[in-house]
Length: 125
Image (cartoon, rainbow, N blue to C red; front, top):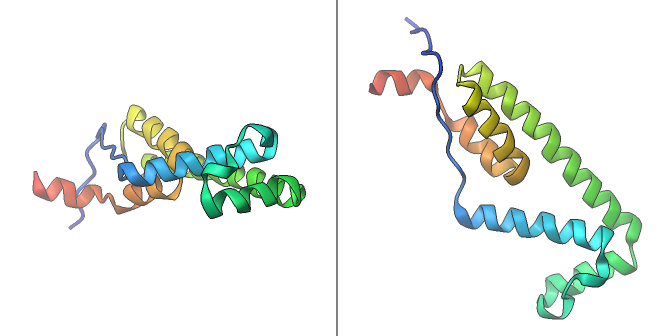
């Protein structure tokens, strides 16, 4: 028998700090290479810097496509996380946290929400 979900659960988990840092740096690098390529310290970034420099100055259309696609995916994913948190009957503050977290950290935050099973949480209580 399926138990009814409890209302106003305030469940929220951030992804691993290393993954959060990688996503933040990756998004920042993508946006900077697209809009302000002259401020990126390519020489200090090794092979990633070489690739970023090439894309920023030689393949601007590709860099713009990557940037706009990444932003679009993060925004759509954030709305879906907000919706999904609602289907799991989380509180409005938890839904907002999931939406913002997914907007910032993408699939790694979404994965934590997808793992969450409110029926298992109730059985443990």
